[in-house]
Image (cartoon, rainbow, N blue to C red; front, side, top):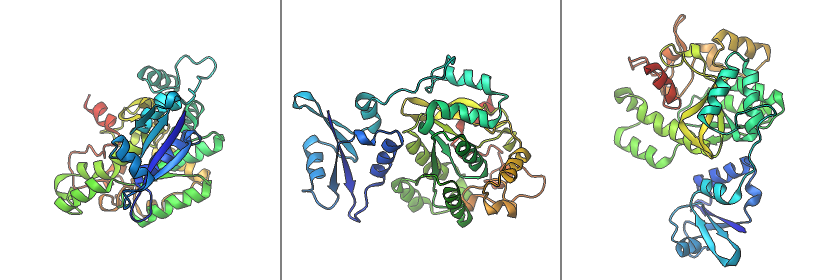
Length: 348
């Protein structure tokens, strides 16, 4: 079997964003060496080898894959996940000795793990995930809660991945903080960005600050939820820095392990770890100070929960972390959509 990946090169000379993300996903899963050849389709050259192949096989999107099988048959795949499932056959992760649940995303495995680990320390919960999923587990990094998880993961010596969403509206301090964490721990990060097509369409129709009038849902969906959905599609599990004490309205019932109700990975619904669920803010900051973990400098200026610059503000003493997010909205159910299960649980 011979696998060719056809990637699109833009007129600027850069690869298309989806092509780069797909390559990164294959590398994260240890499957890049299964790609035998890369052929480029030049956006401004219809005669380039990749464009010729696209026309020959009737493919209108990049990247795509051509699999040459025995007998000379060639099959085109426009989905990297389908290619992985049907042809690349990544080795399954074996469960630990004595463990009954399979280490794949399933509601039964997540429920068993949640019950088993409910009273465990965050380090143990995170280790549970890393030992089962390794680099197929992505820590979603944006704030100090998440960098605590990175610090814990580094200390295990086990493989893991880090993903971060650059919404295009972050504070300058947050961009500097991301680079500080990258440098401090010597880790690679997959930093993904919004798809420019729906983003530009929204801004063209509604301007840059429409969320002040009609709510943050659409903007968060385009800038945060969709990019994270795209990048997490190549993983089997992810870990977040959510805590129950962040919001009595939406996070008080947060489990330490769950089947994700929002995002689907390479094997189906992702297993979602919330190792810090049982910690208080004080407990978290005791850890950050004790272990000298980098933090966003905005915290020292009264910012407890930090998101996009237009939608985040410092809070007064006694206010909750979420009071500094989307403060113009009065319903109190302040979630961006990354954690839709929180809203479902709070409504139940």
